[in-house]
Length: 294
Image (tube, rainbow, N blue to C red; front, top):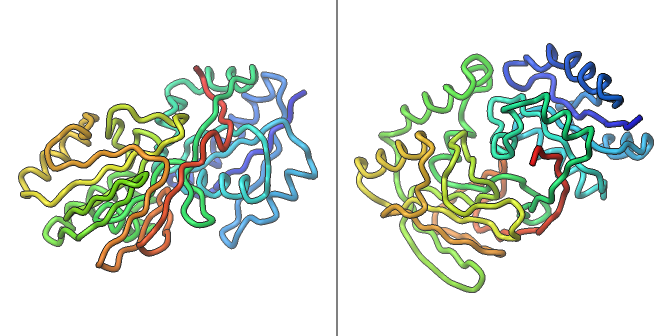
């Protein structure tokens, strides 16, 4: 019987995951797989690595939002846990799970895990921190960091949209310098993202040609433009239309990037606070294996 350690966040997604725990355990048992839960702690989960090593499981499962996925990926890489990872999105934002198409048919996904279907996934790295989905800075980052936890738990994704509307009068551009695989560029922008998948901020198709296993990251930036044009770009994003070819949008694919600005800006890594700019970002090809349905 295969064994899996389940790394779960009990307060993710309106704290509703606790109601799903029994359902997940039953679904795995029905497929002759054993689930051993590990409840995340707010103060840190460094003991998780020793917990996994003591059990020698066949794989890991993470249940939570993008922040919880971010945490387990860093624990795996720093703790040298070379195990395939299953992702059950149960947070306010589940961008990487959405990109993999996991949430569309969970029974099929459980069958894929039982069959051992995996694929490689790249990661991004900033200093000694890894990200699986996105690094960013600018107006999107400030909104994500300033949303009240109680509002997020009560309203879910709508909390971000409400906060974003309230921030519209304060939107301002900032100067950015980018060096991507040796190519240098300067621009006045509103925001940038360095994406591993095409789903960012619950927007499902930000650019054409993004792949999680091509050894590259996709840099997208929205240049300073009129509010009307900015609203048009935002509308396309919300509608799931790629913006990579639109006017006022910069799109670069690269293995290595350095991003800096004259302004004081904090980065965001998978929805978690990252270091202030400047930051250097490397793509780490095929850093982990993830369970998938394809």
